[in-house]
Image (cartoon, rainbow, N blue to C red; front, side, top):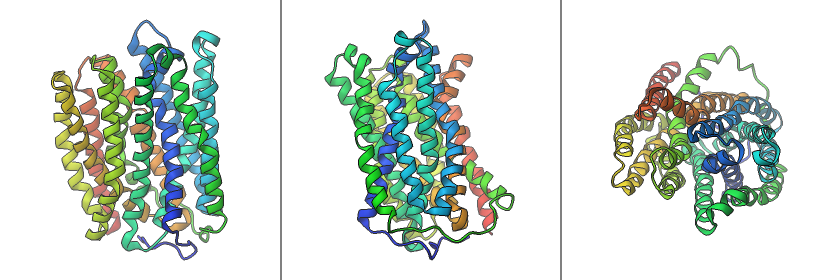
Length: 418
């Protein structure tokens, strides 16, 4: 297992790192905005007598975007490994813009009936294909952009940029909800949130095009990924389940659940998502530096998993009390700190396990499959479990199982490394 950047890769400076992070933030903004707007989009595209059924359909479309992520990971991952990491990133930002444009223009159910839902699905599929290549190509580009001694710090900027994108999305939704009337927000305000992200797509594409012109040519060809690396692919995919489930449950499921099912003020759920995004953005570089000082990124993963497991019952017990609701915010921050520690370290560990010649493809497959199974559909799965069982503990059970899976996967990966 080698963490050394391949010889063909060129070192990038801070300005260029910021370029990578900016584009990634924009893609995450566009991708996660759907989850933040799920309650209003449910009314516009999937109206139903039962609000829970309407939300379930909306989150099924949200999850469907993740089905395309493995395909995007394979197509754009191969492109990145053969022609350069940043060439693939140009394609990913363009495809994300196309999917977001559909959301800006799509007619609602009241205008064209069930066809509105299919248009929504098409937009999510394009976004999912884009994200399948975006996360892996940007993370690998950062990993390979300098010496191994600072690898986790560089990779941490990938997750920090995800936090920046989710933070921006939460702020935009919160402000539009405060500035506009409920009727205006439901009618056209939610489209404005998507349009704001769409405006920056040409800028990010042009910046990446300029950066790709002189940096990071593809590494030399090597032997195939499958079947030689099948065990590492499997356990690496399971490694990210805990962090993925936590991020998507807190950023997309929890705000909708608190407002639509628990009757909490919408602002609390929105602020919880905002707090989670800010925590990811600010804490990621700090944990990246800490992992580099420890000289072994995996050393942070297990303590972080243990802290998360302890916090899950407390977090969802508090949600069920419906009292002192504003105290939810510090609990969310504590949980996200544990998630950040396991994510920046775990992502570095799994990427370092693959050779540079197929690192983007492998990382893309691992990340996209893991996020699809345990992240994108987490909201729909948990809403379904709530409807079937009637137990308010289902979110906690789902999250604890995901964390336990990550614990087991880390042990298996460490055995493979010996």
